[in-house]
Image (cartoon, rainbow, N blue to C red; front, side, top):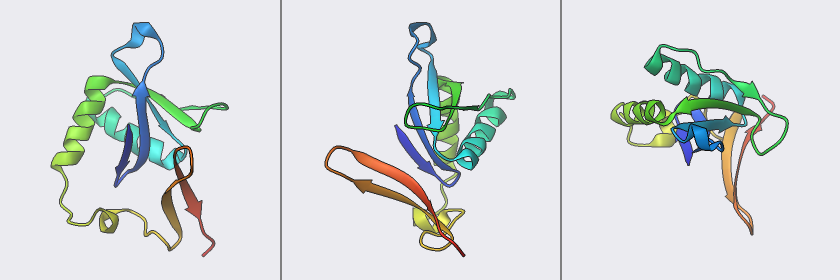
Length: 118
């Protein structure tokens, strides 16, 4: 599941090990996005979630979180929606110093963050 929030972008997938069916991998390309989302997880559980850099795969950072914790964080984000235009609520301004970009190619949906020089 791709999740775009005011706190950034994360990708949520099932933990691959069968003994961890109750957990998700939280994955991101952008460290600040991971730190912001993990802060929300930490607030929910009062425990620290570990961010690990990766060297393989599609994402640069991962964390592991219980599905029920992620669900509570997402529910809280939904109840806190107070904007009528998502783009206007973001902590960055697309097209200015940086922007998130989603595009389709012939095989799949792609996502990236483009940094621009001031």
